[in-house]
Length: 582
Image (cartoon, rainbow, N blue to C red; front, side, top):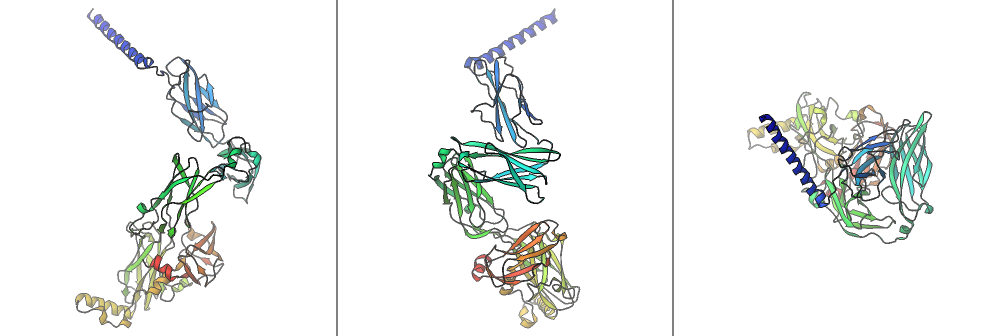
């Protein structure tokens, strides 16, 4: 009896608790008129062959009339617009899909009273391409703005080679043939927009690429392009730009110049929904800007090795769909200096010519702000004075004169240092040590000397350390080797050579295909001087500074190696003062 009474009391408490909970739910939900039902949290989208199957849980409430399915092509669905489909059950099969496009779905239950429940979380699926020739990429240009009559749309497909390629561009063109250049797997076609392609309102056109061969065909969806409405072509008012600025003043170091790795951010305010781009004149082409908020645009550029400019203007361009454009300058011009400063020093710059004495040689790499540059590949080489731009590699650093070898792979460490070792030869001589940054093409210079003069200088240094009253001046000037003079330094920094163009370059045959400037010609910094032919294409080597091309060390069709000197530019005095002397 006691046990039965205990159970009865427990059951009574549970019933009372349930009633309280039910009452609370009614007060909190129905009492305030809020929606009680919602779709389950297990919305899934599964991609099949030519279809996407979307499933979800039925809400616990039993008054759901139907479900609204919303779909977005490559973006979240617009829940405020028209639903993509309306279904009674908890499963929807989407057959209007293209391979390569990410489709995103959300579901909203609708009660019999007409009330809409909260939407589910968004789920997505990407349809795979059917069995056929492989398609890796589909693109179209221009794609960042609406198309107007007269625009030429260039469509490019990348995939398997030797196939028949066509493209559809929505309702504009179906089956546009694309032509492959060689056996590259790259197919290109052009469509010209006509006046009759424009409608009463702006229309979107999905690009679909197709490749076919004897074994089958495949297709892949590409970007969506938009055409103007006919009324928009008559708009001649340029977009308004209220403000444009950049943050170079905040990013640049104490030198006041942007160095490699700095991120320049450009912002603008103007007409909403315009197409915004910016460029650093002489450094970049037009770069896209995003619109995180209506009328607010932002873009960024990461400074790369080789960029340069003392007074580079930053321009912002806003254009509307009708082709009108407004160009304004953002803030003050910026200065860029990505040159690597290489300083070369030998622990003992003077050695006897005994064939065995050694000294440690260090090449230190830093940027314009004095920050160490790590991870750059450095090559050290010897050049007897007067042979700085010698084309005879075998005559530079012969064993009887001395040898210079790199240690630890010749890559700058965390302190910006790359270490080498110089071993004296048995023939006296003065040598310049040339440090070449194979990553950027920059050059630094140091010196070592061997022979009787070097021995005299070494004796003077030892005596000076023992007796401070004696100095190196006690040795006749003719008996002391001297560091590089200004002319030699300028010659070194005007040297250009074969940098590392790609990985495993040492194993490939690199030849000079064409000289693009004649000796005695005035050249600008960054101007292409010579074209190198490699198995991976043609690469052009640029002038290290403004000046005159003084020497071409190698001829056309010559085979050249990594780090080999190609020639020298005599640096213009004004360019030397502004770019190098600081």
